[in-house]
Length: 298
Image 1 (cartoon, rainbow, N blue to C red):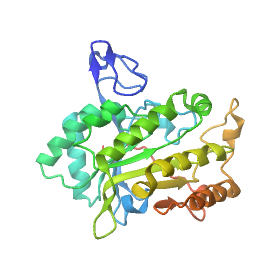
Image 2: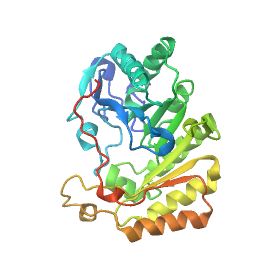
Image 3: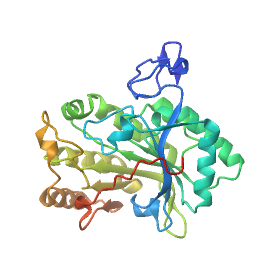
Image 4: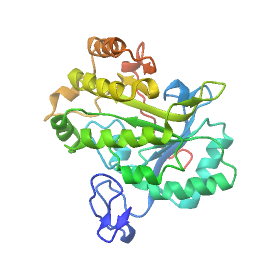
């Protein structure tokens, strides 16, 4: 949304006049920038399946966590400018490649353009679900505008600790904002719907990336989500945190998550009674889930 005072699409409400070419907190102006559009096999099984998720990685980000796993594109260091028409074409090309869905990664600041591009693609034969893959730091007004566009919300819930949210993401209001955003997502989608192959067609998946030394924050997130939404949403617990650079101010972020930390989180989730969930097993913490942002498919 852009009022006379500027952009209010995300909770930052930075009021940048993006239509006039001014860049917002997200780093974006009135142009669309993408870094990759390709089949992606590293999402939850009900999203990627065996055929892959048609993932579009947008550049820029309204949250910009200091440990961002997609730092190169979130900071807009990488990104190619495309037109609205080209974005719609990309959706169709991914469907033609066999994608199970269109997976929009960090889409918030382009939500207006996405609504138009999806509408055009659907008029041209797009039938697969639209996945809104976001940080959880969302405006409820923006989410409401997406109700007829988005089929699946694949959302992070990063913090229940306001101080931690401020420390790592400069967003002290994250817990409050994410709670409201999740409530709106669940209102729109309700209980999950799957096709005969077990691929989600509608629903909400809440992700939490466990950070080093932040087990209590993680448990608080899981507890909140489960106590408020039970098994109507799916909870995905992730252990794949990867230090992207050397942190001097935040030395704890130079470490990977320990096996003991992650096992403790999983055991806690089980003790709560969570049935609808995803965990990462084996050597996922040793793998990189960060693709090459080489403009493939753009």
